[in-house]
Length: 114
Image 1: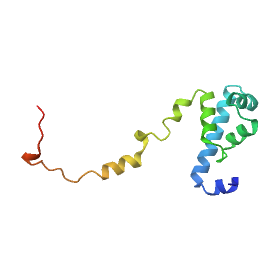
Image 2: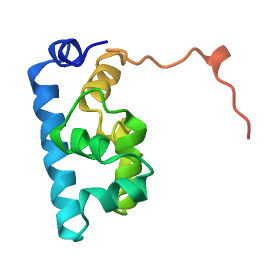
Image 3: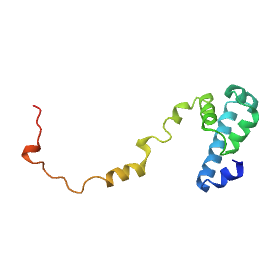
């Protein structure tokens, strides 16, 4: 898939988010006084991949993003990217699916285990 079609297939907000992530990773690299070449070496990739990552190129794999996060000591944050506890829409849907009324079960349906 050509890079241009990968970008055009994404919503503008996703493209902006990837670009912001790339800028943030570049800042993290600079704060640690790492060159792109040294970061690439630690990530076991080439410098061009690091440059694409820092530009927010949507064709950079999630594995590359994860590798950068682990080099920076931010790997724990990856696990919570789509955590159910942060899914407001999913929680709202679960609440919407609850019954409107709850009725007392019939006496025969009550299963007491004490």
